Length: 334
Image (cartoon, rainbow, N blue to C red; front, top):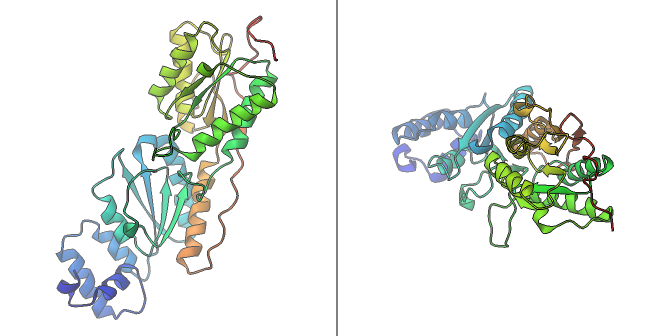
């Protein structure tokens, strides 16, 4: 593209990064070259290069759309308030063929990377400013997963349950695993720590590994309810799995919450119509998007990078899917 525009690669980079120290005629020549070379995301390049437009980019997995939608909503509202344009790219389970191009054109602009671990993007394609939302490392903007999990487990204990099973999110089961998520590990640890503090040691079969999908929630529920001594409560690390647990229990003739209590984690609007109404841990997902955009806007404006805010607080929302256990359905605390 530099040869087509008859300019240096540095000049092309300056134009795509929106640098002001480029003559208008040179800027137009580079943009014409972008168009001539067939870049499909040319509108993005124009927005990056334009003096009146400021751009933030967000990449998210479409496989977890209800969650991502809430993050995008908060990010979009914050971007509009700060007079930024927000470009969203949804990718599938495998890396989109357009992703690397999208990232290269976002170079120098800010970038929100929400719920998309393991995309395998080369380091050279990453934008200048990058903030991960609830990503696979601790260097990301997140909610208090540990505290939320402890609150949910404690709620079940206070109701009188001592046979409490857990359906995890996507865990890294080995050091080589690349798709494990720290939020899943924190929710598992909150459950385990709270039970340990209560003096409870439960069967290994009470821990079922899920991946946040409804299918994994249904599999876990059927395995748990088939045990010789099934749990009286199931805490699922995500709402989609919790709702699947409720449906599987009902299919097996269990009444929720009379026979089985169920608690989730997310409080996504998408699942608020389920009956019985789901007791769950509310994540401030819109606030995650807002905080990410505000942080990225400061970076894009050249401000000294500030530390990310501490984990955002979660809230236990008590509804109808959890109740005291049936009589004679608890084990003795050691």
